[in-house]
Length: 65
Image (cartoon, rainbow, N blue to C red; front, side):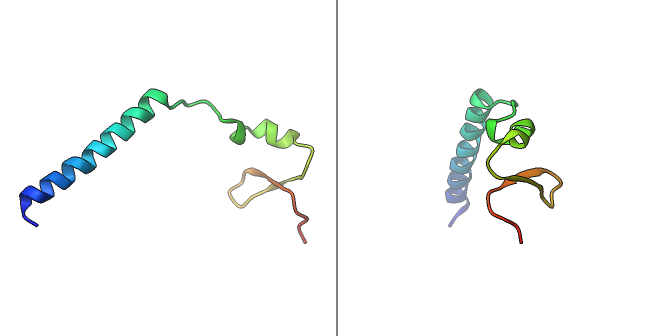
C-alpha cells in the first residue's frame, strides 16, 4: 500500500478511537458499581468470602480443599 492508503486507514482508526472515547466521556461515571462494592460482597449470605492473590475479597461458591 502507498502512503495515501495508509493515511485513510489511520484516519478511520483514529475516528473509531475518538468516538469511543467521546461516548465514554459522556456516559461513563466514576461511581462504584454494584459488582465492585466491598461491603456488599462481605454481606453476602450464600458462599464464602475469601482473600484472593490480589489482596481483595472475592466470593467463592465452591468448597476449597
